[in-house]
Length: 290
Ligand SMILES: [Zn+2]
Image (cartoon, rainbow, N blue to C red; front, side, top):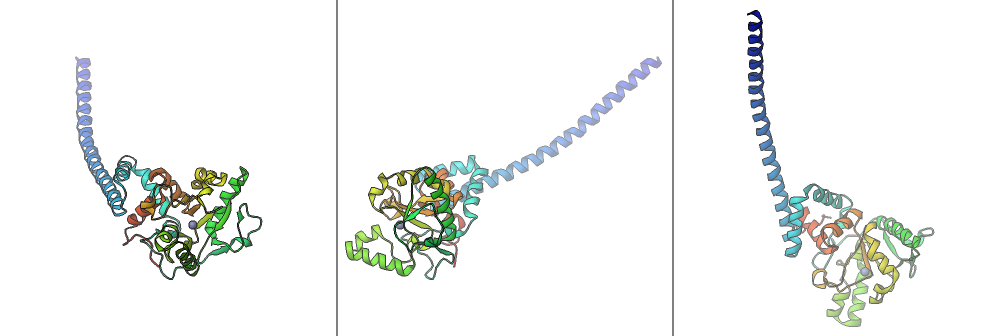
């Protein structure tokens, strides 16, 4: 009898514990589920906002429909990596990704402060076609890193043009107009204020003719430049997009992160990526002020 009672009370105790535990975990579970549901809703809203921002920037940048679709898909399916790519590309000096083309001039008074004369460098890994070339210091160090890598593979990069002031660009443009007429000149040369060379971040390599594309420096650059933050500005078949005919020799330093973004997300087309970043910054034309 005592044994039975003891057994019964143990059983009763056990059922109570189970009932208590069951009740507690049920409420706890509901709280966790509620939290989970609201966190899920918040994440879904954030994700939708990101996708819509990407679509708006792509549209403002005038990107083609297939690229916009691809970017929206990446925004939806690969958001953390895409956000990280964008943040990294936008983090350095804003002029690295500043759009300079026929519709987006530099501020009239813009003059880079940190111009370095290439002639002053001790034993650089690249050559120059003449003395007097200059570039912004961050482009000089990026150029030296790239040229050291190319030289290790027995390829010598020759700089034929670097920074051009507005006054110098004016001379180049007027000379080109005199030589070939205005319409042809506009496909070849930029008016002052509208040239990437005025950023002090662009370099023309080698012969500055179509023949350059057949040389080993050109082939080396095609394959390797983006690893060092350099990007071909006017690729073949994109004259309608860039406003300039194909220039196999003209590379712009955009920084390693932006160069990776251009390759990874924009099919290697610098113009698309920079126009997108400008729209993404969402400040009028998207370029930094001043
Ligand atoms: Zn050029």
